[in-house]
Length: 88
Image 1 (spheres, rainbow, N blue to C red):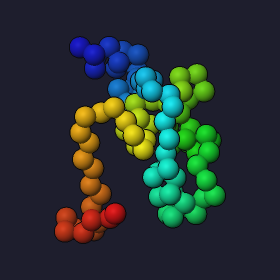
Image 2: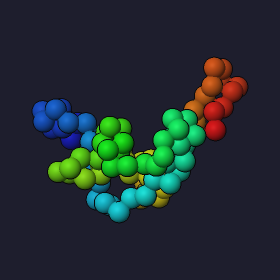
Image 3: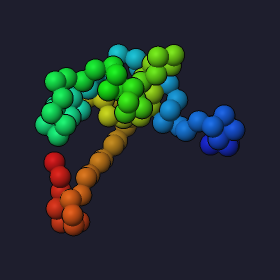
Image 4: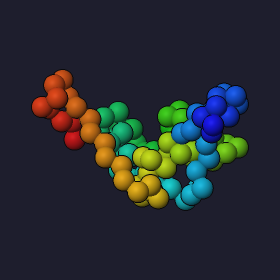
């Protein structure tokens, strides 16, 4: 039912505002610095990644990739070219 309501508003679950608006992204920032050679993580980069909106603040997607979040269990793996190769 919630999914249908969200679809009616043309919104995805991960776009809903996060209850926690005091999020930090040190791990994400370090990864982006290594991969994209950025100086630091700015609010503009968070907006570009779809993690922050001026009106709503951080969304649930931002909460997922934040340094700490209130979700019970999240296991994420990024595979390389094969299932045996992990990108860490």
